[in-house]
Length: 409
Image (spheres, rainbow, N blue to C red):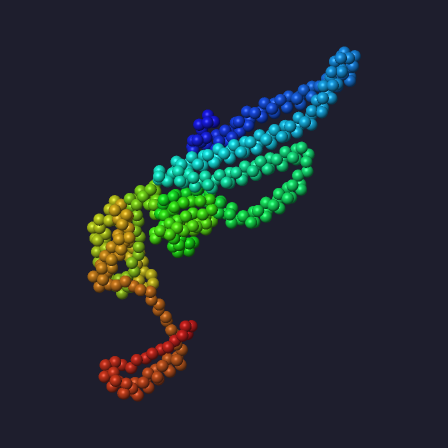
């Protein structure tokens, strides 16, 4: 079982954990059982010595001497047995963690081989994953062994506080100096696990604001950077940390996605057209023509609800609501279908002598009585002294009154 199941990427995590502790348990369980037996034998000897002290005449002299020597020997071994048990547990735990790490990495590599979309790039993608995972695997192995060694030193009675201090300071210095390196490596692992693209895919890289940054084909994914070759043939080497923060659009997965079937499903189109309020008497004919056009449209699914009607009066306009569902063909050509509907609805409105509204604002200005009298006097004065201006207008237009108001009047 151990030689075949680790290669299966469908093995459950529980089975992987059991396989990780199988070999260490094979060696250390008998040893732990032997140490436990020694401790039990020591307790039996202590019980025998207690009875000897109570009634020395009940046993022979030879038996008492043997019991005392066995008690002395087992008493010396008690500390060794206790420490040996703890050391066995530490070694078994370290060994199990190392095996668990190896099995998890093997499962990742096997899953990567199975999920690679293009067979020609399988080996290249697998090598790229190994370049990222294997250095981290070696580093984690050293960390596990170091932690196990420190625990073993504590069991043996060695003061590890100075060692921990030096290790902590050194780890802090190394972590600060290699922060960008570790960020790129972790981002590289994230790219392998999330798999937004594989080698050979054509992708669009955009910033967080949506501005297109780069378009090209993925040439190689390294532990520290990803190489993308643009349409003009130039290779761009992007750090994995930067690429992980970008918006990636994978053009190569348009036809490979399971969501491609959604393009053959009906899609709802809901919109509102606003007609001028003075054209309200023309709405019945407009709505009737719109309904006839939609019922005869091949892109409208007749099995689903289709509604055209007046929804209300708002902002000095008559709102007409349109609700239709598209056929699979119209869903695939959604942009042209929507544009065609809007053009034909506008043609129907104009043919009926109506027009769409545009945003308007009506200001009601109230003037006081002195202000009204002043405006009337000014108009009378312009009417009496405006013969020259009326000649310029050839008498065709009355004098024009212009009011200049400011907001808040």
